[in-house]
Length: 543
Image (cartoon, rainbow, N blue to C red; front, side):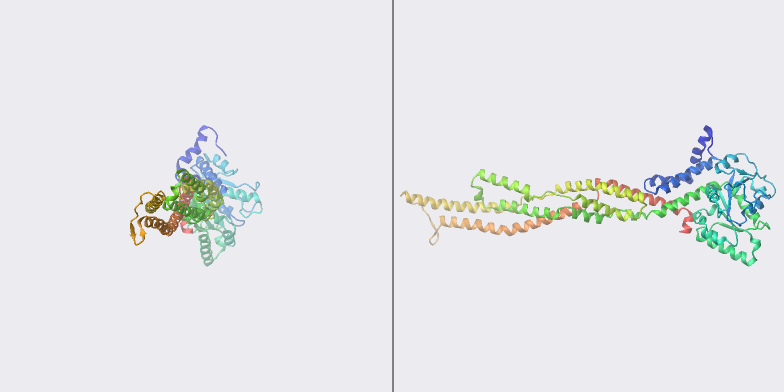
């Protein structure tokens, strides 16, 4: 029940900032990191726990709520009466309001009504702190409906109060205790609550000395299997009073120390933290599969086309630079036209533009996050897949731009110019020989004085030697350059292939920044959950 008035509205906030702040801190950290990543129902439980803790601590801190729970025939009502020294609960009688618990606040009842209103317990039997209840000042005993009742309202009431109590006294029967522990399901959920749990093996007077020790040992073994090995387990008998004083002493100690409310909140936090940690994989598993992504990116690029284009571009440039200068002497206009057509052809056909298949990049990104996404809760997994799909287009465009900067057209080589210069020299010699021979012919035709043509070797004159030698030399240089051009084209093609491989294998950069950041947050969430869970002794012992 909500408090009224300005000071009462400020109380929950003050409670969360005060004693609950440290206890709830692991939960707050998980909520902040887990928003949109952990299952919504788990986040809702975290928010509900924070609200419940705030409300509980905003009410009476002078009382410790002790819920007495158990199944039919366990004798919990009789045990409550024995603890209080008077009949406040009616064993074996159907209660007038069957879906409500009975409350027995011990001692000063000041401030207890708002707490009981919040607990929604309206059957109240105040008990003075005297006699058997003398040491229980501040205890608020709740006799809950049977947890195995056939009435659903009883289950709801019992579960709600078990969830809200500070200390839980669970009463089991020697005949049905194994069934209760194994099948009722409550103890499984209380694995982190050993500090705030008392288990009373009641009706001990019905057991012989040997049987009671065997039953008690077996009960402790069953509790340990459910992570409750540290829970306090006692033999009791409401009929003979055996163990009642010890139970009273345990409750009185909790009331004096006033630690049970915070201990209960801490246990609830530990349970939620452990559930969160169980749903998250180890941090090392939350990484991008960069090898798979790099492989897909390389297959998404038109690498074969680029490699072939680079080889053709090398051959074209080399053949032009080492080709016969005589063809370039046919006229500047013709040379410019030829070069322009070559450039246009290279730009349109021989020099391909980098292309990246975006669908393949998207498939690669989804495959790269799959190892992490498959082990994460569905909200986090869906978040990763969505980020991977949205990063496909920017990543493909970024890769396309980086590939566009690669040198498909080779830079001119020095040996090209050397071969071209030699061919120009020998072709000039051939031209000189040709001109010499033409001059002699013209002089003979015009009956002019003969142009001398000294012999080089035998009948071979210098003009003829220059003409033939220059022509053959140019052809030989061209023939010798062809295998070098083919070798250079292959080397240039392989160099471009390595550059494409390197660029396509990059898995960082701005397009993937958000995806890497999300994986980092998932790792941080897993680390936080594991660190918080490891700090809980119940988790460590049960794990």
